[in-house]
Amino acid sequence: MVEKSVIIIGAGIAGLSTGCYAQMNGYHTRIFEMHDNPGGLCTAWQRKGYTVDGCLHWLMNSSPGSEMYRLWEELGVVQGQQIINMEQFYRVEGADGKVLTLYCDIDRLEQHMKKVAPEDTRLISDCARAIRRFTRMNLPVLKAQELYSPLDGLKLMFKMLPFMGDLRRWGRISMKELALRFRNPLLRDAWLNMWPPEFTALFMLITLATFHQKASGYPIGGSMQVSRAIEKRYLGLGGEIKYKSKVDKIIVENDRAVGVRLADGGEHRADYVISAADGHATIFDMLDGKYINDKIRGYYESLPIFPPLVFVSLGVNRSFEELPKMISGLVLTLEKPVTIGGGERKWLYVRIHNFDPTLAPPGKTLLTIMMESNYPYWEALHKDLARYKAEKEQIADTVVSLLDKRFPGLAAQVEMRDVATPVTFHRYTGNWQGSFEGWLVTPKTLMLNMSKTLPGLDCFYMAGQWVAPGGGLPSGAMTGRYVTQMLCKRDKKRFAATTP
Image (cartoon, rainbow, N blue to C red):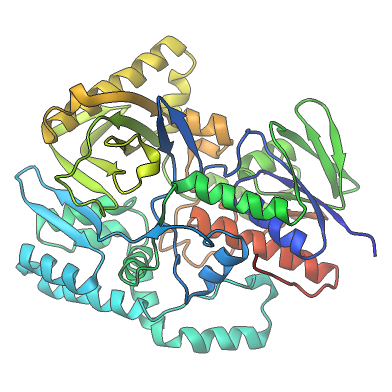
């Protein structure tokens, strides 16, 4: 039997996952990637002896016992990895010197929050009960919803029945709505800072549950370590990757995707085309907006996306031994708001990477600071490169000055400064508006199941964060598995998945 061929656009997590599962199921695949490295947004870069990790904070379901862990095993992500578990999810420092520590252990977290904010005891208990319940939930992620039979639906309903009340209750509440229910100002600010205000509170509680289970650990080596692991798995399965090969157009004949045309003019043909690239670029540029309906158009006109970032990285000749190493993030409340990068900032979110010795020379530390931003502001600024570069330098100066107040002497210890903007993210990954995780999960989009095909176009599929609200590594890995299952059903194959 002749192998059917598949072209995959993009070597991010979704593209690599698609390639792995397609190879496991007897398809001949080629991935075309515009960059010279795998991973897409799950990436890192070198600056003056430091490795700037641009993505990974934790790997969801990084320990055995969940369906998602099985998927990581199949993709070769967890084998041989040193994975550490954080003790503190966030440490929030108020301008008045008060500190709220969001411990990963639920009991410790509940006790600490009640001590800091006794006036919020009832709400704290409510949240803690929900987190404990979610520790017993194993989300089904191994099969595409499009392929569910009525029996599958009944099994899912039975499995999730014990959690339905909490899923409905917390899924309807945004992070802003939940935060404003706290009377204590430090708790209120802390919960407002965890994710964008429109984000559903449900995902935050589930995340805290996985931290308590020690099931959302950090792989030493960070983002590129994970991306390289999946790349190795894919190549080991016989797949091919063509780097520095930007796809300009998807070739369509008689409403059937038959290949791709690269920026250099080269054309490549296949039985199927799967785009794991940016959704907007795929639909409106590579396909010229010809295969779309009102529903899909409405997504790009009205659905909220994860806001783009200004991403500041500092290499510091300092070990930060005064802080516990196992902190996922440090939130510093500023004495007064500061305008940085076109927006007013009341807090700085700082990640001190002293838990990963591979990212900095001995005795030194990588710091990364993420700030939500505005793509049109940076797009306009980028038209004047001198002003654009000056703005980035000003941002670095301001951030260093603010951090020096919290960590006296830091300004003199900074050896490396790097500023990535929303334009940077767009330029290197093609991600629409520079968004780093695609569609935002809100109470309205929580149950949204987006199609992985386009109306009127045959032999074409999409994978990745633009067909799965919530983004992140799990959505990329899962949708790669799902589109391969859909291919197998079409070709009357039994889907198979193996572990290395």
